[in-house]
Image 1 (cartoon, rainbow, N blue to C red):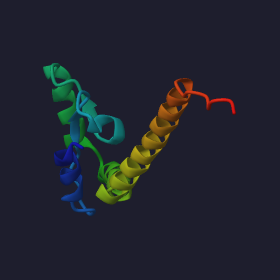
Image 2 (image 1 turned 30 degrees about the horizontal axis):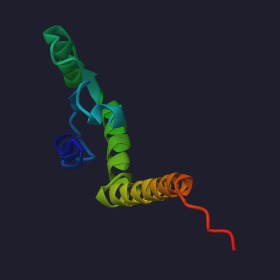
Image 3 (image 1 turned 180 degrees about the vertical axis):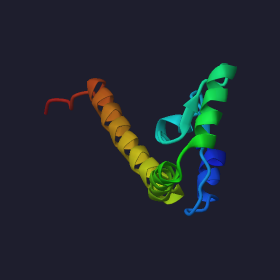
Length: 113
């Protein structure tokens, strides 16, 4: 779940938030698109992103933070658990139907009376 990146966002002040730099290889990069996404193997790219973060205007920092924060609040552990359990239930139903169909192929027909 990449909680460190989410904790960074949650710990920021709405009045003067910091800027999140995130490796493009981190799983959270897909969800946290408002972060400055970097290739950690490119020193020049990371330096450029750091410079961009340092010079970023307050209104842009607040906008990026607000969108990240809102997404984190929406996609909390309870939402994750609800989605996980629904997916698990769906998988179980699909598996049950597949097993029943497979078992039907091997069923012995009843003897004629």
